[in-house]
Image 1: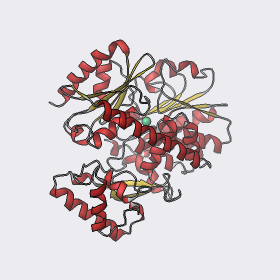
Image 2: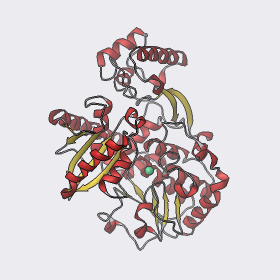
Image 3: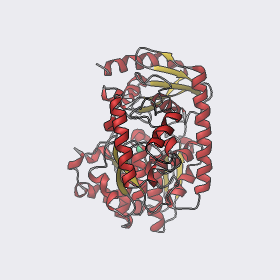
Image 4: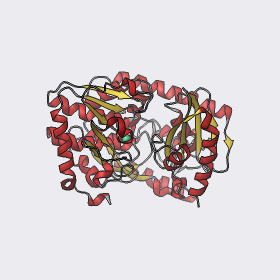
Length: 439
Ligand SMILES: [Mn+2]
């Protein structure tokens, strides 16, 4: 149990990693480009900066043979948010990772070796944060620690154990309220319309219904959730619960703990950690991860990040159109979307929106594929109801692809690369494994 792992237990390991990093003369921080990877890179960059060490940050889309030649192996590398799964290549370097490790090495800090579960308890950003505290003794990067946790979907339950330390700083606040996306920047009418877990008949995906609902409660559809008074919020919550309970929605999923960054400007995507993680993903997925790192470090690059977010949304909208146009084909235990042109870095998000908005059936996971160099990028998305029933897409993809590092592997969301000739076999195996998980 993660709750049993205390800071005291893991401090020797954190200290050893901190010391090793401090010894490096001209380190290169190699990080992944999703929200957790970018946050991790920013945390270590902040620490190195504060120690007045020269360093570079090198964001990498994925760490595998296709990118090995882009890595300056002769230098002092620090891998964050990956590295444990590629241990033959990375064994001599510092690694801070939470993915399933293969074997212990001298400078590897992996969640699993600390008694923590790397898919539920702790992200790479949080591990980096704990290491950085040992290096520099400030806690400013508590922000990045939590944004990475949110990005890796580890806040469906409240932050717990050592991962709760950032909440005790002035940089992060825990708040109770609606768990839907867009609390800080979306007008209430849009916020309500995009509510998807739970799906609310008559509100989710229904602009008119959402608008009427708000008007009936005397709420201004253009206000944001965050701007409401406590009294307005409480009334909104109880009316939503009443409405949902009448219609059989899983209302217990509506309220929960979420995290805001009180030092960041209000009404921007930097205030609410879930919007911040989307902002970072937009930077990473559209080839500008360094903007994401800059914004996390407090550089003046918000306008550029915002531009990337707009491109991101435009491409998602286009992806949704393609999905609506082409439709899905049915397998026994999943539905398949074969895309022609969606960017491999966002196809998973398109699949996620499709299933959570019920554009495709929520009763089976959706598997989306798109051709990419030498094969297919595969992305799967499920719902909380499906994972409650035993579906674990991350595990299913590992088995079906025959690779231990099947890509981003969570129960509800996972991705993989499949070679062109192996696609048919992969899909058949996927169908079989998902069927077995449901039993
Ligand atoms: Mn991660």
